[in-house]
Image 1 (tube, rainbow, N blue to C red):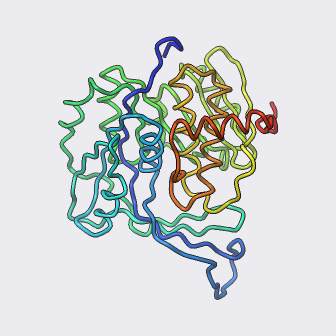
Image 2: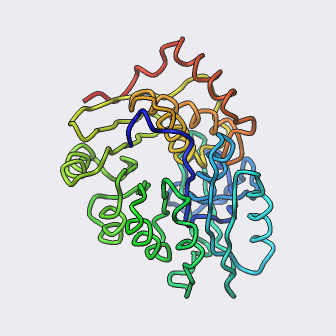
Length: 313
């Protein structure tokens, strides 16, 4: 994508919507039997697809999002939450419950996520809606769910840029390989990938445009196709309320900046800013998120020089 031709792109998002029960614990969960009094608990829309869509829409991106949902109240809650002028939601209804998670949150933001009602693995879907709309799509952000695999081939055949978020990939699980192979751009977390730099080098050597690796509170790292490394610290001054959705917020802030011709370094800084704004909210997105608000927050962080504390090469 040439920096001179970037603009707000129409983003396809396939999969990744759920209803989450979020339980904040007074201390990290340990193995021994015990009774725990939660600090607070609530239900909210979750999922990596919803997280990206809800942030990108508020940042001005037209979003086409596909989801599989049950015929239940949880589905209606997702539909209501995703009711935004910039989101066109396409739903395939199944005679199975809507995906649900239970997220156990430590006070410092670490999460144990239980798939209490997993997504349907292989529903019989008609992808005609995507084939009809594919010419209007610029970027395809396809969730790493089994049912989304046919959309990879549709996007690739149409020559669309495929951005894949591998989340906590461990560097060897074969489940992820088709998504890796289809990707033009990869995002990944280093939680289960200690040798993340080797993985990043391998992916760039395989032809990826760039790879971004996030490290939670330790910042993020990127590698481009020319072999240039970039490091970015986190944005500071945002008290932790709920860390759910921070990775998708980072992705969205990054894409917002990259779509406006910003450098990879600047795009990482915008991503870090949206992620920090997100953890200050119980939602998957900052409640006041808009381009002008993001620019204000970014300017404050840039002036304070908060992005320089990063892992180092």
